[in-house]
Image (tube, rainbow, N blue to C red; front, side):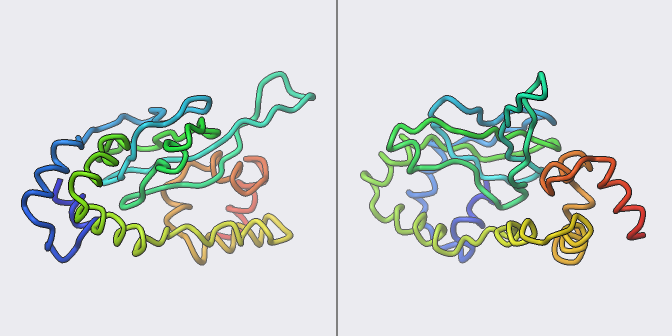
Length: 194
């Protein structure tokens, strides 16, 4: 739980009663590899703050020339990232994407409904959460820029230069899907770049 508080307030200024309230509405849970945290078609009721592990976000693309739907990777999340949308929950919007663990993952799970109730009961708690949201800058936000590059080799080089940890941590088939190429092409590019 201490890691979670470092995410919310690295200065350690959260009053004890607010920490206790947050403890009551949250739980830390370990998930094995390949666990679906969120699936499309249902309204997600939780926020997941990743303390350890890797998660991929993907959707399914139906193609008439294929019998099965094709998985298309959209993004990857790691330590100190969060998953879930308060906006979607409050507006009763079903999720449209899958979130699946790629490694054994530890997350703090908070019920959005209970979080809303806590904001009403403890307005000061909202201040800490809001400050966290304003400070939060997803490390991988610039990755969509890569998709504008014309060739697969340039996209791979962009990842290699800017996000080498993706090459090390994410299985090749998911990176290939993310880059919009097949796994064979990805392997050839990777070998050529060595």
